[in-house]
Image (cartoon, rainbow, N blue to C red; front, side, top):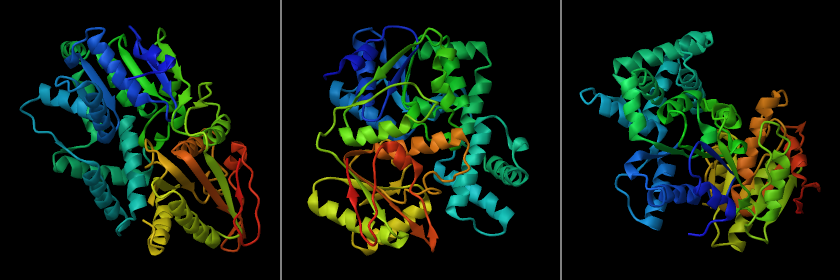
Length: 447
């Protein structure tokens, strides 16, 4: 496996805490697997002493498969999620105790039941998901129902009562059980000796509770190796705290910070647009990605007179892309679940079968072509009255969406909807792209 100089420097990091700032398409999975191999075969670290962590089972499984494909299986090596690691610790410490863990589907069902009992009706899925995220964030912060608004407090009380009656634990309960467990110095020392080297991917998504436990487990952080990108921190609504990656040196003063510069996914035009836009954020490290992706990439701005025309134009553009590039993959990325439903229906009715998912859901994925519709004020960003911090969060979300594209990026907006005039998203101006509008027509303005 060949690595660039910056990847190689991080992989060969010898000792002490380290943070690798890995932008989109910078080869972070290759870096992590290379780092693990180096620990085992160069620095002679026993595989069972290493914990390789990510935030989803899918990404943890992908890292494991990538490692095994390159280097062969390591039976004692632990790939998993943060929650699975601490769940395994609980099971080892309390073998006689029956922990019944709720998956996300079961959790949402319990939240839906609690919310329905308060509303007197079945809540919409978006309502349920919103309340579920609020409950998760409160529990992650250790706030509990007492610090919630009156309505949320009632729902949370019902949720917690039913959860306990069913003898269930959610993911936050697992972590709090471990917080209590680690108050015993002998137990904490035992697990610090078990996992002497911790590697964590997507570090920008860590919550204060998760980070507190990981710091405890790593002791002085001597072998804490984190990989992440503050520009892709989009899960604040789940309790993630971007400030942790931004202030890494405050937690670990002796830490080394490595910056990966090469982007192997996005072509230069796509990457330049994303880079210009995200540079307007203040809460970030200074860095500049360089494209090593496809040289003949394309960016188009599609401007429409009316929202109805935009939907028709989107379907036509997806069809045209399918015909022109039949072997490529593509996706339509939406800001909300409501947009997702509307676009999915329109594509289905037109006989187009194209990946359609939310911007949050696209995190970690990549496509040859990406379509970003409804790029208007009050859609992206979601409101003009956002705080600076929230506005930066919206900008990061669009940055993630743009950098899913390798070869072709299509961005569209309309100038009116429901007989009201509309503005193009301010973020379009920040990309450095220009769009012109011809009445009842689509103009592709490229750069």
